[in-house]
Length: 203
Image 1 (cartoon, rainbow, N blue to C red):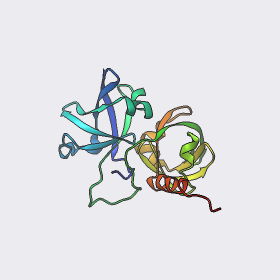
Image 2: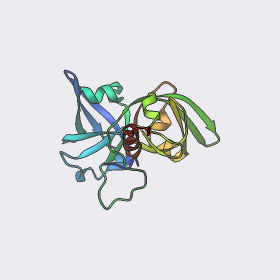
Image 3: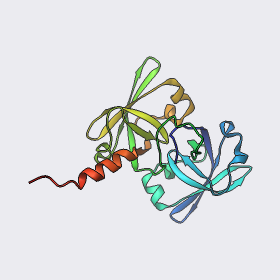
């Protein structure tokens, strides 16, 4: 479980392809300098995708991503030198500053347009219609592992307002129109949609 509050940016330093899967090694960077507290078997959110640490070396943390993960996320499209958002799993004593994020990416979205308003940036993302059914204005959404508040929601897109700090400390400030992003909807929306889909109309 995560909060969607990114701890820092990591850099991909190596990708090894193994049939339909990959091993990816990430340098966690200065923001996660206490990397000794991270152990093999720990869960880490990488661009919103929960993966398990399988090795730790001077080069960084190594993870495995299988075919299902690569088909649903943008991890398979990244290359050595790419930046990724990192967040280690939530501890019971941590502050919940974002929202409950599982690290289970639902699908990929695409940056549709970027609008500047002074220091603020509004980003629109195009997503499959089945995902917008789980979204509401002022609700929560996770984009590449970042917990954000929904501004507007249409049948196949949504917008978020980004402050300069978020743009600076996450990969969102590097996004361009057409870039793929990982989307995870709020788990509450998923349960409500499932519940309501089983409600039979009164006769």
